[in-house]
Length: 257
Image (cartoon, rainbow, N blue to C red):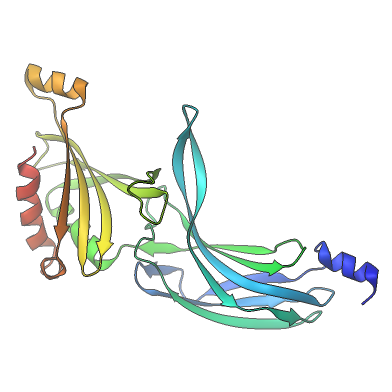
């Protein structure tokens, strides 16, 4: 290869292209995501240092009294080591990995996507983005169904900056519900965070009581009308189904409403 052609390759002229094909664009947290990465060589031979897959999403963070949207890496997977890609060569690399338990679900304003990239030394990095529908883990779905049984309607789902609560991630996914039946006169809203923990599911609940009377109005103004509750629901209870979980949640929430 001439020096001129090497320079062309290093700056990405006629470089390789990448396209990721998923077996299914819909997968639950904890399940396996499968697919194949298709790589089409460019006009020149190129060394690919590695191929990586990222699960990505975005979250909202306040900076200088304004809200900004930040892209976050949820997980990273390396699927190949270094190899040479001949000019015009077409190759396929299958992959399969488990969607981590802390991956946010794709609801409302919480998109999740898979980003594929070729790491080419000193070259333009060709990337490919594919949106994925991440559905709730079965345990999380049991709780969502249980809250539905109690008349809570899901109003909003957001990814919010909270490094102290997010664990491996700089944000948490917050589910905001409004009461429509049982707690309609007692609560303004209910906010829930979900954290899988082995065979159990931990919930962080923010129970926002409705202002009632003069004391309630002052409590609301002072910010003391909210209760923060942590509860661990064991797997054997979750496997009993939404109705069983709804009964326990109803009693718990009633204690703070």
